[in-house]
Length: 243
Image (cartoon, rainbow, N blue to C red; front, side):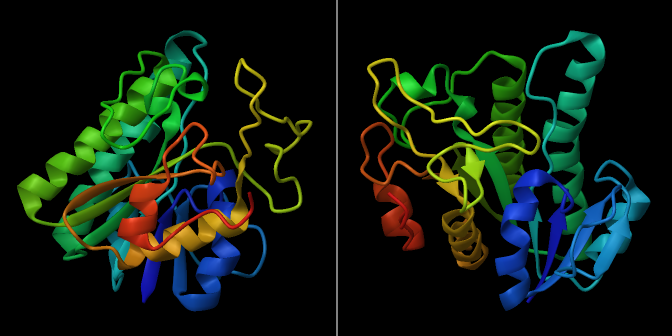
């Protein structure tokens, strides 16, 4: 199928693109050029530009929304950018998909929709409760996805991620330009990051999962010490192989 990746030049999308491009035709929508040869079909623009969105949606079978807004709280400008990318661009992407007749979207969310997620035992039945800028905007984005399903009858599969990282850095979390970090709970429990290979398999499975609005926790905690992996296993046939 032809898959449009929103924010396809970003860090998280970059972890997924090579595997995605090996199985599907990939188109990227991003204001920055892509690195590598995995996606030669690139639309320069943002997911808040209706013209760029309409152009990018032509001939597309499914969409992966992987754009990432601000993760910290640093004044009005950062807050505005977080809402623009994490909420507004999600709504406009879904609207453009609906108008173009694209019936399925995969939205990359985050376990940051929960307060203190590293200290809690969580599964998908626990309501999101984050109040910080990043967690709040990711919560709102999920509500936007659920509303699109109800309003337009499309399907949206939401993947809540925790610390996506390269396969080489795993189990550490390694953001570009930063030292790798091993994340631990307060009691010392190691919480492995989500390896790129595992994330890619989850996205491939989510592209095939077209059952209304569905949310899955996709993390490197395959043991379930903190985050129960059962729903992703049952619904997507997915589990973390690196654990």
